[in-house]
Structures are given as structure tokens and as C-alpha cells.
Image (cartoon, rainbow, N blue to C red; front, top):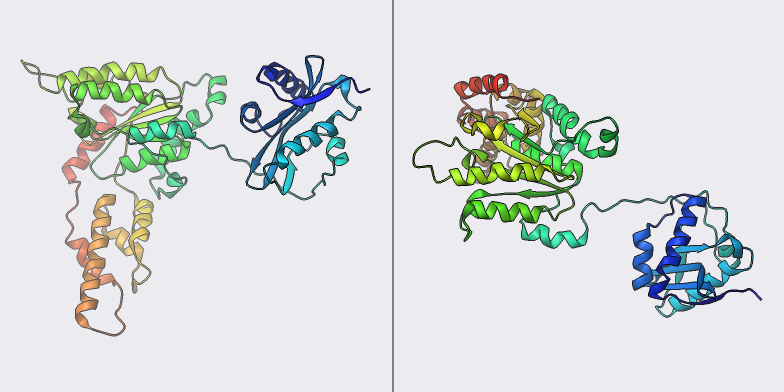
Length: 425
């Protein structure tokens, strides 16, 4: 007599599964599948338990993906080991999973696991020289619907690495913003409070939006851009729409929230009677402290005209950092030009273009590059040659000469003054 019997899992067996899980953690460390996966498979997939009376002394849980079956969990109490209980649980589990048409049943376990006899006795083959790879999906399925309703999205990985040049800005953002958020537990041990809200300021077209998206990509958090102009048609007005939007954002586990040209809703409050935007500014000033109370999220506000922002908006306690984003340096301009010079280009030295476009914003460089390509296309088509040539250096020189820089010398000078007066690094 074994003293135990095997039956199908019942919902009231969950306490027994939890006890087995705790015993497994105490003896073997963290298993491959998490507790949430185990409990989900108990409810939705296949599970059998071994019981002595009403006491659960063992369990085997599996799931099926196409024709592949996986053993998610196999555990027994110490007092019944060596009685064949593990092999019997696997056999019972396989019988139930066979009805789903599986052609293979597999199991993953930590390398330190020594109790493999049940698998070997049941005819499993121990595979050698295999690597197990794992990646946690940052945004779960239940969040995707809410994210879509907010107009947000999950940005592709690699945007941070794709930002060429801008070494000083990237390094500052990495150390001040990304590092404490990505290493939250370590930051807490060191007494570092991760940032909850930052302002990026600088001349138009310098890449503030690009950096906001890159931060979201780097953290692998949802990205939600709030467009005040789109919220203005809300029945409750812009202030009500902002309040509802941020209430919905609070339901996301992680999020980078981006407001571009924030000066439109946070400009200086003055005048009698109050300006139409004063109520919106007041609402935003109320929202930010509430937003800061939630972990796993970051508010990024960007502005081209930081001098126009209300003084209360920028004070300590609302924004952790006020970070300047200036015009691209040589390395950044090189990376931008390389992005837009096609393979068909003939005799184009990017370093020449970099030197000619000092003071250009990324948008200015893109405009000049596209203008050069368009000019070369027109020349090729109108010439009627059988083997048309791609853009040449002359095309780019002409395009650069015809491009007016977005940022004037006066605006650039004001930017450097703003770094000294309002920058918070």
C-alpha cells in the first residue's frame, strides 16, 4: 500500500499547491515557472494531485501548446518520496494531456535539481547541451486594451542605442533618470528616490521627443503621449479631460507619459479676468503631485520656451530635473547624416556635411538631406540617361545653402542663459 491516491485537481486544492510550492522553494530555490503560471495552469490546463485522506502530498501540472506538452510543476512532500509517487503523477498527467493530441511531453527544471528519477522512470530523456532563454514581456495583455484607448503604445527596443551622438545629454539622462528607474531595488537600498517627473527644454527640433521615446524604449515601459489639443473637445473641457486621462494612466503598471509643448497648458497665470488656460494650468499643478505618488511611471514634459512656463510649475517638488537638450554635436550630426544619405549617393563625404551644418537641428538636417535627394531624382529623370547617378556632394551643398536654420543665434544664446537660470541637473 502506498498510502496515497491520485485524482484530478479541485479548486479547493489550492492551499495544498501553495504548501508544495513553499517546500520546493525552501529545498531547490526558484523554479522555472512562477507561481502565477502554476496556479493559472491548475485552473485552465491539466493538473492532478496525490492525496492522503484530504491532505495534498503531491501534484503534477501541465499545459499544451500546439502538439507540445510541458510539465509546469511536479512536487511531493518529503514523507512520500521514494514510493513511486512522482512517476505515478507524471503518468496520470500524461494520460490526461494525451487527449489534446500531444506528440511530445517536455519539462524544464533548474540545473541544481537532483530528483530527476521520476522523469527517467517515466521514460523521459535527459537532454544535454541545451540553453534555456527567458524574457519577461514588459506589458501584459490586459494592459494593451487600456493602452490603446489612451492612444499609447509599446515602443520597439533599441531606440536608446539609435540616438547617435548627444553624448552629454544621453549620459546625464542615463545616470539621473534611467538608472534609478531601471534599478529601483538597488536605488532604494542606496537611499535614492527614482525621479517621477522631469522637464526637457531647448530650441525647437533638437530631439526632445526622440529622447522621451528613447527613455520609454530603454525602460521597456508603455509610452503615452498626451496631446492637449486633442483633449480640448472633451465635454468636461481640457481640465476635465486631463484629469480623466491621468486617472486612466494610473491603471497601467509602468508608463512614460509625455507632454510636448507643455507651455500651451502651463504658461504664466496672469491677467484679470483670468486667461482661459488658467484653469487648465491649475488642474495640471494638482495632477502632478498625485502622479508622483505612484511608482513605476515617469512624466516627461518638453518645452521650446521654458521662460513662458508658470513659476509654480517648475518649482522643487514637482519636477526632479529640468534638463537642457541642445543642438546636435558633431557626432550626432554625423549619425543623422548617415541615416539619410542613400547607398546610391556618389562621392559624398559625411564629414564635409557635418562641418557645414553646425547650428542645424536634426529636423534641419533631415530637410536638407531630403531636398538633396529630391534634386538628384529630378535631375536623373529629366536627363533620360540609362544609368542615372545618385545624389552627389554638390546636391547636398546646394540643399544646405538653401536651408534656413531653425534656431537663430539669439535663440541659441537664450538657451545657454536658461541652462544657468532654470536648469536642474
